[in-house]
Image (cartoon, rainbow, N blue to C red; front, side, top):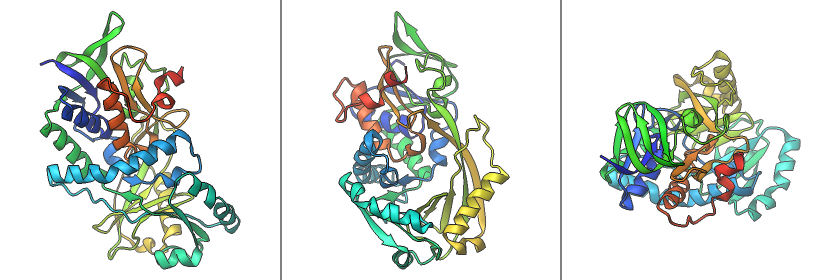
Length: 366
């Protein structure tokens, strides 16, 4: 069976883009060596916070803000189509600081954030603890980013794969051997099951993108950055919203679990949870909310963020006709998914994306 488009990778970006392509009438096949969402997508915290990255501004913030606006409709669409609860919560995000001098610097930066379109307000230490009583008394102040949200990536990936399959996307398990290029254009993908002919190929393989033969990306253009995560149980609910500290973050779930993360390690593809990683994460958690010292441990894991040198994702067409990308989203993979899917799908379909993809082009990588 020939496809109009073959997608390599069934993480959040592969599945979300495949869904949009199929809804537009394209014949789409998604290739995954394991099961959809088995790697970084399901291992993420599920934080939807443009505000946390607002200090940098620029193309990343613009894309994040656009994507945040698309999330409510996508959640409603997926929950209606699949009946799967995504644990979507819109309580906002806190970004706190402990050092009093640094708090003054942050407070002075508030108007710049507002000018960037970030719905931010400043809370002093007592106001923080009024909003979140479990926060440490040592927290000097912080930003509240209203309108931001979180969700659970595991049901999200189940819902995306289910919705995509319902829209006609074909999922095929097995190893990709190479992107097939003939006469200087893409003609499909060589898979363990044979040649899959296609007019276009979307490479959405996350941290593994440059390992795919024929990727067209320079060596090291996308590299793995390991993140470890620890889950604790706190009942009744101890923290009501996502909290970022200078050392990590807490993500509460409706069932009482609190995800505590995360490390940022240049460790190659070594997928392990280390003693040092857990010590760092648990220290951050207890420093942020001291009552977590008594919370039962539930589980832990690690996986790999797909990082680029400049921190921007790689989106849209490559140098070889028929080859497209949606990778390199680093720690913003969940947040950026709706915008990336819509923009890359438009590009694949020969339409003009709603946002100029030039800042995210693979051409910037050399």
